Length: 196
Image (cartoon, rainbow, N blue to C red; front, side, top):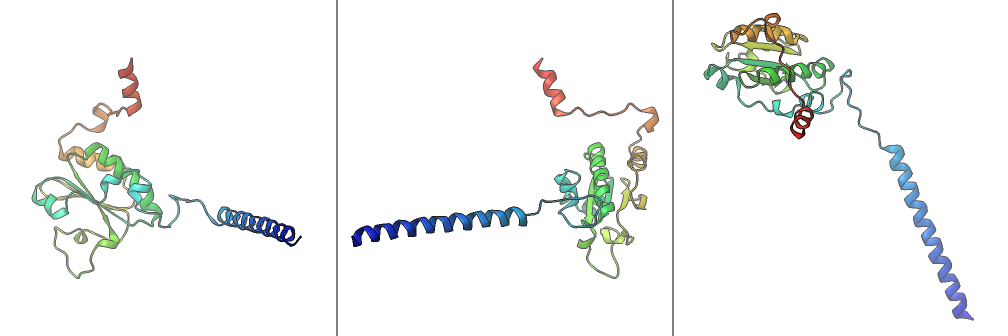
């Protein structure tokens, strides 16, 4: 008889243990669902969500830059300095235009995004250092021709057309209204034409 009571108690303990474990797992699952917040990356807020070129422009190839300003000027190559901070809504929105500039001029112009937070604090800067051109506001764009002369230095969201006009002058290209519009094909359109 004592063996039957012992088996009955053992079964009851095992059942209670399983119920307790299932309740704990259910509680843990509920806490995770309630406690985990979705990742919101907003272009119109001043929160840090990561590098703006990767998150908002979809272009991780801009950071880190391929060459420094000193090497670019020494190579007599046109350049574009783009000063930014990762937690500025204006810079987040402007990252798309910098990426668009790379799509058109990325092979001929050295595009150098400079995070303002990485500029060392000094009293004087050399003209080959980005800090020499930084005005204290972001976003800021500085364009150089192939001789190293500044052809545009503006703060705020400079329109792509203004940057395009300056680079068209550097490369002796026709004005935008006289040239044929450049249209890039998407990968899917190209693939569908090949399959026919």
